[in-house]
Image 1 (spheres, rainbow, N blue to C red):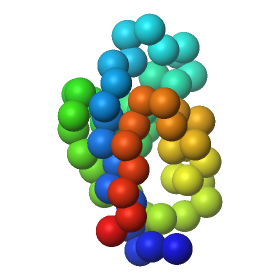
Image 2: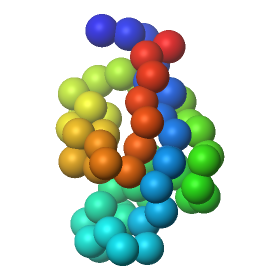
Image 3: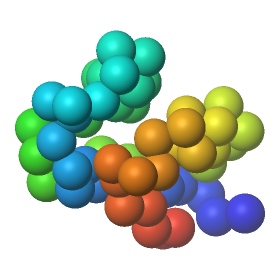
Length: 60
């Protein structure tokens, strides 16, 4: 596993269900094409998996 994950919001949350919107917000993504770095652990991986259709993930 990598040390960190670079997560970028590539699709809008306008049509997403409320649970997915809250997950995106909890990751620190507020605007389209914003990128955040998070520690690589099972909790973050699970959050990313649930919204994988909205984000792009790179291992850093």
